[in-house]
Each structure stands twice: as structure tokens, then as C-alpha cells.
Length: 158
Image 1 (cartoon, one colour):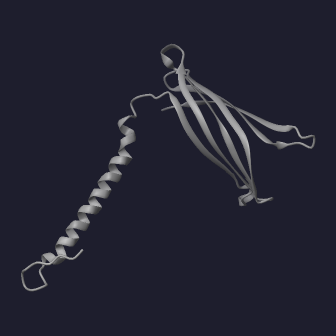
Image 2 (cartoon, one colour):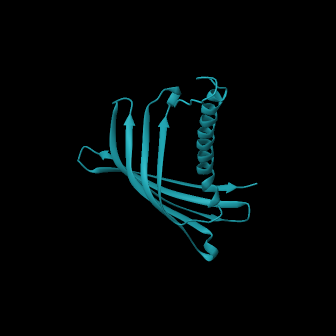
Image 3 (spheres, helix red, strand yellow):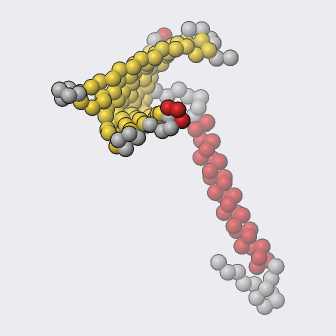
């Protein structure tokens, strides 16, 4: 983009400043847009939302500091609340699980899922529980191997 001004032939001090001004306006507009997009989730933060969601989670394993495996879950889920005043929260999610092993340098696709719930015990203390399951290929008889897991815990807020 070239600016020409009828003053002093082809040179004018604004010939340098005008393009800089336009560039600064563009940069400020982009920064303003990025800031607005970044702040937009906080506009809805006060409202609780129950419904469908997507959860992508990757777990990596580094025993003794060396990479050995990775599992990436790509789950579709649903969350909501039940009970008096909706204080008990729950979720159900499931989908493909991509499992990579360094020893075979291969990625296998399995199926995994989780169900969980949490409930307040007091104003500062809540309890949660989760049950998970995933397929893990087939055994020598051709039967699907299923791995199960569970966790239970408490969360204290200050």
C-alpha cells in the first residue's frame, strides 16, 4: 500500500506515519478481538449448564523419565444435577481411546467410558466417585479384554 501526497514531490512526513497508523489500528483491532473472545466464557460463568459436552484427555507414561505409552480419550458426554436443589452432580461419557505404545510404535483404537458423581458434604467439603472401563484388545481365545477402574475422593475448599 503506497500513499502519495501532493506536497514536496514524493516525500511527506505523513507518508511514513499514515501506513504506521493503519498498521497500529489493525494490530489493536486484532488484539481487541482476541481479548473479547478470551473474556467471553466469563460472561456465562454464573449460569450452570447441564447437557452434552466433548472431553478430550491425554495421559502419558514416563517411567524413570523415558516415554513408554500414551492414551488419548475422545469422549462425548452428558452432565447434569439431581437431588434436592440439584446439589448432586453427575456425568456419563464414552468414546474411542487411542492407545500408543513405544515398544511396538503402534497405535490401537479401543472403546472407553466413565460415569461419576459428586455431592457436597458441607459448605467446604465435597465427595466424588468415578467408575471407568476400557477395552484392551483380545486375549488368546478371541475374547475382548475389559479393564475397569474406580476412584473415590474428597475435596476441601478454603
